[in-house]
Picture 1 (spheres, rainbow, N blue to C red):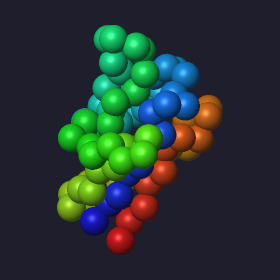
Picture 2 (tube, rainbow, N blue to C red; picture 1 turned 180 degrees about the horizontal axis):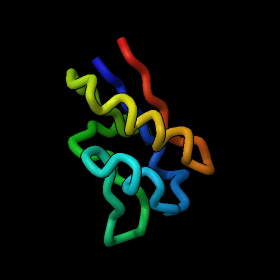
Picture 3 (cartoon, rainbow, N blue to C red; picture 1 turned 45 degrees about the vertical axis):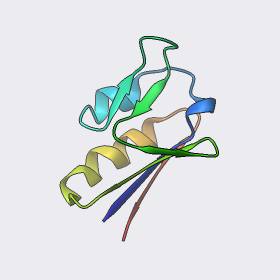
Length: 76
């Protein structure tokens, strides 16, 4: 299981996550911030649990590229 978390409120809209992991991230046309697709929001944290381990590398690259460090990726 891959667990991806996004703190959307702190997003600055740099677009790195959407470029590096387009299957999981999109940029909102409304406010220009990142959206973690198919995630569940709880207290400002958007979380996605994905059983597909093939997304791990691209999501880790997106997390490392994020200039405000608001993306976390864990593997269980």
